[in-house]
Image 1 (cartoon, one colour):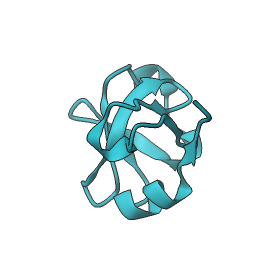
Image 2 (cartoon, rainbow, N blue to C red):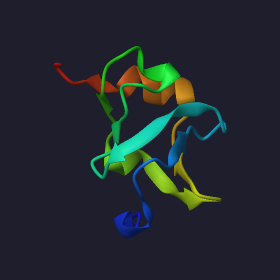
Image 3 (cartoon, rainbow, N blue to C red):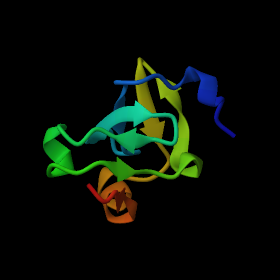
Length: 76
């Protein structure tokens, strides 16, 4: 299990493949809507998809494509 205290706002989120997924906006892993990958909407990632924090980035246990498919957009 990840130590959530290591995750900070504005950390980059990357898939297990190292590809950019988004930017942390909130601990539940709410990605910022102004990130180029967000298409203008906030998205939520599941904390259980977080493998850890490495080099100032949140590293997921799934690839960027898998993470993007699992993202849940928030109503604006």
